[in-house]
Length: 415
Image (cartoon, rainbow, N blue to C red; front, side, top):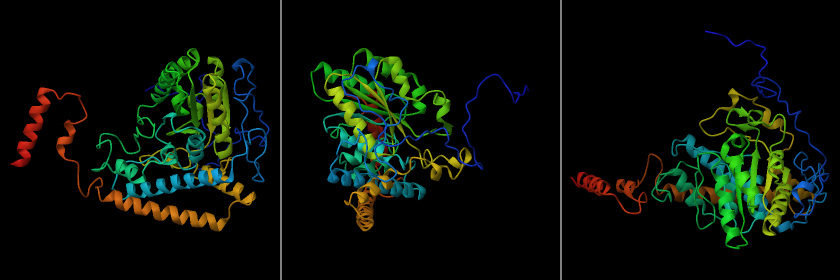
């Protein structure tokens, strides 16, 4: 068997550190908050300042909001954002424990990325259509989706809106204007662009927003979406969540070594923003800017959210096999919840005791929601969906052999 030489002329992207080594984030340049300029939302993309290489930040090291992107969000809105991010994290922790107890099959946490979804959802309107990936549960929570319904979906029980036909975390919520999450990565961006094109064609004021990870930018669907968004100037926000890892492949494998993911917008004539994804105020401000551009017929915007996936990719993953155990603690942009909490305390609108009380209240609410969800069944216990539901919601009109099979199933069950 031919061996591959240690030195080759082919460049193989490698992360800066591996298990057992010291975490190294020296490639992440963290500018001072407030340095990035804020152009008019309707600026010509060709005149756009280089915000695709900069890093839009609002919260500085003294926990104050500074610079042109600090757009004066009220303290009430910030407290609501803090509550929603904390709710998302507590929800994740509860469902993770349930999975480890064998009561659901699979789970994906969003720890450390809560601002990416919650701040964006709060910056958009309820009529705007969202096309998330599987780590944006904060969108559902920010829009007020029922926690029991979300849990029942993950448990695949008798109250599951998808009737057990979708993996856990692949939520769907038509009433909340959030499109079904897909395990086929990248599909949501062309769908978001198509929906936005339809809204523009109908002269509606609604826009669309989609989310993918850094790894998905290497998929063809990503580039198809950018092409159509640019050609038809679709009112859409295309979000790339650069959390540094696509399962076990670090972001350089998708092309992040030699250029930022935001820079890909330039080639399509799409304005692009690169944002501190762990800064709630920065994500909120960037999303509002892009939404204003889209509503005023300025076309699409590409936003790269620089963040970090603190936990494993999923409950089927062990990150200790490909990155240092201490890497999360070394991440230079901190924790989005802690940063927003510190900012509210700094401006005299919050306290540690209030935060502890909020956490207790959310935890009690989450426990009560799970107890209710469990009454509808879990993966292995309690009531189960009738077997006949496998024939429902598949075809508009049942085919003859499906009718025969269902009758046979019912006959065997009665016997």
